[in-house]
Every structure is written in structure tokens, then in C-alpha cells.
Length: 183
Image (tube, rainbow, N blue to C red; front, side, top):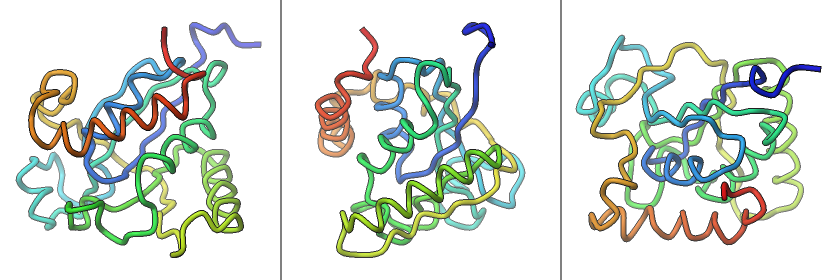
């Protein structure tokens, strides 16, 4: 059995604006770090402006380091599918473009299998009227976003986008996943 201090995995998820995902995942027990960044594209070391142009192929993602003995990858996916709409291709709300796509960049065959199983279960449950378009893609590279994007919601809670878009997602996650929140 692994020592809990040494037990860690990494998950890389894209579900629209990375500010929204980061603001929720930092609240969860077992999550050691959440870094906003870019994955899934073809341009090395992209800038935010390049990613926003849609020309790099990257998605805005969060890379989550977590203790699987405290919170599982499946738990992370339960949160993921609660805080974004996985049925809209290349968009989340008013945010439109491939950089806002829904994607799971799996790091292991087990993560791939779990992601596919969760999507199949959600499809069978018909939670949404439209099909899930979330990509399940092998992880290749992660580029951390610029420093001003890290902990964005915590540092800018009164910024209009944060109040209108991020705060309701955080409130929904707090209510739905109360038992998984850090003290």
C-alpha cells in the first residue's frame, strides 16, 4: 500500500474557461494543486492571445494533481460533468471557439477507460437532450497559462465575468459536492 504522501495522480481537463474549472477544483479534498493552462494543440509555448485566436489548436485546461486515496479520477469527472455543458461543440455559454471545447486528456489507460465509462453512463441516463461531445484524447503536453490566470477567481471575485459565470459554478459545486469540500 502506498504512503498517502506519495500517492498522486494528474488529470488534465478542458471544460470551457479555465477560471471556472480551477475555482471549483481547488475546493476539493485530495486536490493538491490546480494549474490553469493549455493542452491539445500544436504550437509550442502558446500565449493566451494565441490560444484565444483559435489558431494553436489548444484548449484552455486545468491540470489537477490529486491524491487518489482521497479523491478518485471518477470523482473529478463527476464534478467536471456537473460544472460544464459537455454537449456544446467548441463552446461554453458565450465563450465560443475550439479553445473552449470539452475534453479529457487522459494520462493512463485507466483514466481513458474511466472517462469512456462515465460518458457511456451519462449518455444512457439521458441527462442532457443532446449527445455528449467531450473528446477523450491522450495527454501530450501541458503549458501553464500566464501568472495572471492562476487563482484568477480567488484574486478577482468581483470582476464581472467572475460574478456572472464563475461564481454560480462554484456555488453549484459547493452545494452538490459538500462532502468532498476541504474544511
